[in-house]
Image 1 (cartoon, helix red, strand yellow):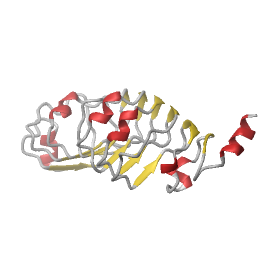
Image 2 (cartoon, one colour):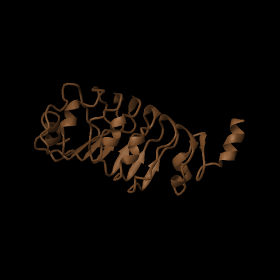
Image 3 (cartoon, rainbow, N blue to C red):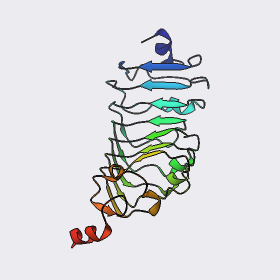
Amino acid sequence: MTADCKILLIACSTLLRCFSKPFLITSTSKPKTCEDIMELLVLTQNPFSLLLIPHELFNCSKLLDLSLSGNSLNGSLPSEIASYELRLSRNSFSGQTPDEIGQLQNLQSILDLSYNNLTGKIPPSIGTLSKLETLDLSHNQLTGELPQVSEMRSLGRLNFSYNNFQGKLDRLYAHWPADAFAGNMNICGSPHKKCKDLMLILL
């Protein structure tokens, strides 16, 4: 852990990049200000005693990459964060994905919410993230039909596996690998199982 990274936890006005894996973050060492200079914050696999994402991070308007994977963060997902890459996998987030997620038009590289406890339907607005390259919502408890991806022209990788999705896959999903939809017993269509096979199971 460098001195600059420690400064981040007090005032991130001069920090450009920070990597910490692992580093103990406590409720008394959370960031207090952010003056639009921080670009990258990577705090993975930390034994956080602060269980929620500090709202001070929402003021980091130039934050390009926020990676808080592999911690013990919980509660509902914040709707205010707008970064270029957002990695919040392997935490304990619960509840529904915020409807405002479609407003995060700065997301251009990665949205990774895998290995959490998210429930409910995916907001249709997620399909408007036209610049997003990777979408990983695997290993949650999400339900309903999969969103339309016709506007997600930059999408090169997606993973909806091991949820509780249902319904027939849109034809636009046909060129994706079957692994991207594995573990969803109630969906059908290419590249997943044939819909007539699903009907036999349901009967």
